Image (cartoon, rainbow, N blue to C red; front, side):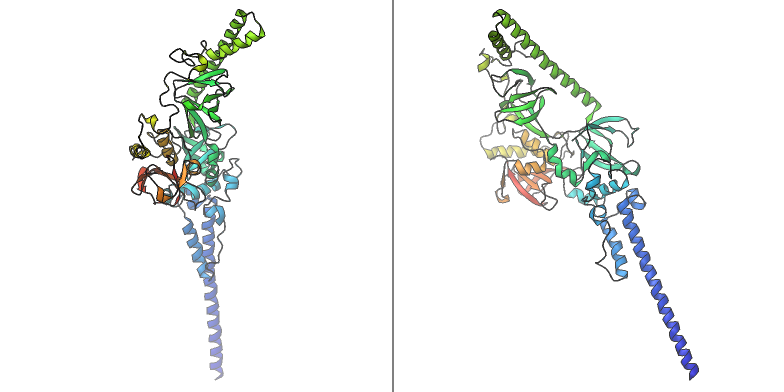
Amino acid sequence: MKNKREKSIALCFLAAELCLGIWIIGNCFAVGRMVAAAGQVQTVSEGDAGAGAAGEETSQEDVEAAWQAASETDGNQGETKLPGTAGTVSGNGTENAAGTVSGNGTEGTGGAAMEAFSQTVSGGDAARQEDEDDEYANLAIANVDHYVNVRNAPSTDGEIVGKLYDGSVAQILAPAGENNEWFQVISGSVEGYVKAEFFIYGDAAAAVVDDYVLRYVTVQADRLNVRREPDMEAAKIGYISRGENISLLEDCGEWLKVQYTEQSVGYVSAEYVVVTETFIYAKSIEEEQAELAAQRALAERAREMEEAARQEAAAAAEQNGGTGQNNAAGQESAAQTGQDGGVPAGTDTALGGQPADGAPEAGTDTAGAGESGAELTGQVYTDNEELRAAIVEYALQYLGNVYVHGGKSLDSGTDCSGFTCFIYADFGYSISRTPSGQFSSAGRSIDYSEIQPGDIICYTSNGGRSCTHVGLYIGDGQIIHAANSRKGVIISDADYSTIMGVKNVID
């Protein structure tokens, strides 16, 4: 009996040791799995090794699944906290914004910044993100003191192909270069590489993009006077010709304050111009040279006018005995007639020979200038229903065109807000160049039940925080819109995405 009892006790101890060994081994496997999961999170967060460094698509779902598997081993599923969720792994950019979007290079350089961008813009399921038609998804804004060079390779050894001035917008195509410290971008006609540290991008860019919209006036007359003050009797400082653009500084009602040259500010009659909103884009070397030449010509035009006014004032003073009173009168006369120097004949004088102070402010051909509705397209419509049909027909001719983020032309391609902005501009309407600007200021807000062809539908892809996309309603529950770079200009169901509002621009 004693031997049997001893054998039983020995077997019990052996069984206990076996259980303990199994338990230890099981825990080792659990710890190993959690270490592996932590390593995966580290790879996604830091972007300096493995899939993250190679630019492979490691999604948030993959990370969560790894953590979930490790958690289930020790029975703590649903309680494990994901390190770095706010900003680095989740890809919402909220914490990264403090460094990566500031453009000061503190955290904006290296793989970590690019990994954050990959998660917010180009990483994960890129096709799904494009389907959201968010105009700001790949937006970048230059944040520099003056300008930054655009190069043909992601290196400071690359050839300079253009310049991005402060506030210029660009579309990010992909991270590039060693440690993904560069962005491959396209802006205007320029495509190349710029260091990421010189950009605001992601959610931070979307939040401030409206602050970077440039407003300018385009002349609709053959010649239009630029005056020193907002008054027909004020002295002229120059003129601008049909199609020329100058920056708008302030809307003063019947007059617009403009930046005539770098050194001079003047006023033009609002009746003869169209106000347009756009962005600043990169300039190629050739474009910059052409712009500088145009600025020099404008400055020379202003200088010639000043010299002509001075000479005519001197002649008038000499003819009238040189008194101060007559000299002042001569200066005013010279400023009003402007028959010498850079002012073409007819600028201030009507074809019928009217006196200068009774003449139209714009010279010769002013057809279409200052007219409302659709007269700029060469037709006059009898009612708004006919106008709306014409706007829709006009928009449909661009079906299938390419999407160009920040594009400046319906023919060569533009983005969603550019599409609606330029369509309306060709019918004489001036609306904002951005989705949020169109939502806040274009026409009047109406209910979807009141929608008519030609109205603008505003969409949101961020839960209603802002308008991120717009489309032109064409009737029968459909819109035409510049969707994204993958789809171009297409027709979609009007309710394909979350509608934030509807804008009636016409009536």
